[in-house]
Every structure is written in C-alpha cells, then in structure tokens.
Image 1: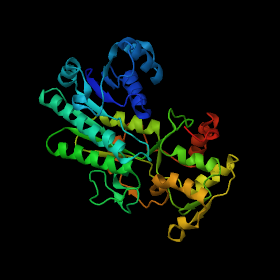
Image 2: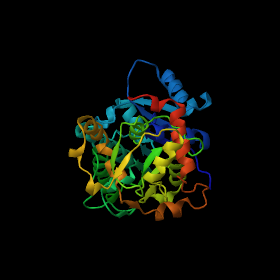
Image 3: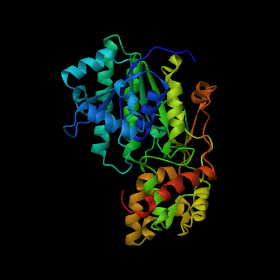
Length: 369
C-alpha cells in the first residue's frame, strides 16, 4: 500500500477497548499524530496524562511526542473544548474517529441517548467545522451491527438502515438514531465511513480483553447457575467478533480513500450457536443445567420470584439469544481482500479461549463488575 504523509487524527473513546487498541495500531504502524479527547477528571498535567494513557494502551513512551490529550466532554457543545483546543482541533484535524459510546445494554434511555445520540451530534458539529475549514478529509463512525435491531428478522444490508427495526435494548435504539444522523450528514457532503462491529469479545489469539462488558455479564449468570431457564433454541446463533479483527479491519479500511460513503459489517460470517456455548461451558466444569425453552412456549409467569429477578437482568440480551438477524458483508469482504485480515472463525476453539481468559482473570468468580 502506498505510503502517505503523517496526518492529524482526532479520536474519541481512546481509553475504551476498541479505542485503545486502534490508537496502539496508529502509533505502531503509522507516523500519524493524535488528538485524544479525554474527560477531565483531575489536575494532572498533560505529560502525566499522556504517560498514564500510554500505560493503559500498552505502548512505549517513544510515541508520546505524537500524542496530544485534549480535555473535553463528548456531550457538551464544542465537545467542552477550550477556545484554543477548539481552534486547533477544527483547523488541524485530517481525520475524525468517533468510537466513544455507552455499551451497557441495561442502561436507562436518558443516559444512553445523552452519550450515544447527543454525543454523536456534538462530534458531528465539530467535524463539520473542521470540514468547513478545508482540512478534514474523512470522518469514521463506529456504529454497531445491531442498529438493525436484534429482534428484526432480516439480512441487514451494509449501506442501508432498516426502516422499522425491532430493538432489544436502549443501546441498539440510540446507536440507530446516531447512525441515522451520521447518514444525514453524509448526504450533505460529510466524507464519512461507518463501521458496524457485532458483539466484540476477546482477541483471537488467547481471548484477552481489557473490559468484560456487553455479553460477559450474561455469560457470568451461566457460570453461577443463576440462569436456569432460557427462551431460545439450541440452534440459534449469536454474532461475536474478536477485538483484534475489528481493530485490524477498521485500520485497513481507513487507509483506503475509496471507503468514503461506505458502511462495513465487521462480524463473523459463521456465528456460534447457543448449543455450542452450552457444551463449551460444560467442558470448563460449569455444569449448572440450563433449560432451553422455545420462546413461544416460555412465560415469565411460570418463574418463581427469584428467577423472575434474574430473568429481568437478561432482558436486554434476549434479542441476541432469539435472533434471526443476519448480516450482508459484501463491502467488507471486497475491501479487506488482500489485506491479510480475514473474517474470524468463532468456533469451539475460539469460545474456549474467550471463556478461558475470563476464568483465568477471575471474572466469573464475582457477581458484580
């Protein structure tokens, strides 16, 4: 691939799972300079904050001259930037990477809307100002494959949003509205690229992950034997992807100028089934029985009070357990060809790595995060 001169990249969500890995890749694979939006939490100097960030990311201190931490707030006008930082960001940024999001599936609507939708609007306003300045080349938005609604029974197309999706939780709903806003700005000339990962879990090498979020709390209910009845079918699949695939795919796709205006599903093409998950669970000695009941035969009314309380905790996950949603991958397959990044295998061996890492780190021993 042809080398290009260094660019200035503005990144939200740099301390999150995907964000920190993508920042690491930028530092290791490119000469680019990074503006990282970080919410001000203490009085540390910029140098100290950069050192802490580099430690979190796990890269060496030689990269710190290419990083500038800017204090701000995703949900504030102009991202809460100081006048000087606003001027710098909007006049010097070549590419925006909006990764930050609230991924808690059980979060209340107001908080999900504030971060996922209103936050995206604030980022878009900043990006449009950078575009008006004549500097911005591209805007990358990290959406989710589940903007299609995990209760929706369709094959979700990459370059479209379904008109009437059926959502399982506020995360899906607010990300749908946020992507809709990005698409509106695309239609008005914003040079945007949309990435839609499915459920992001540990890496493909050993299942390692920095944050046990999204699907992990559901798996923990399995481990503790608290989830005894499940409205689903053994043949139902759930779409998970290793974090290294998402990061590498996004990196390669971001290098291509012809990706502008495209949407890419970063998913597995052969997702594992619930039956396979239950078998792998037993291989680890997590043998508490789970009765899988066809959804049309299941009734919450048949559960005792304790089981109802547990069932209420899995309500945001039900779309992933009963989903008939599938994903078109024509864009991603075409644009990743020749990069060395292939769609991931999420088979028995991969599930063993992911669950094994969580066990190794003691995650399943705790009932709370």
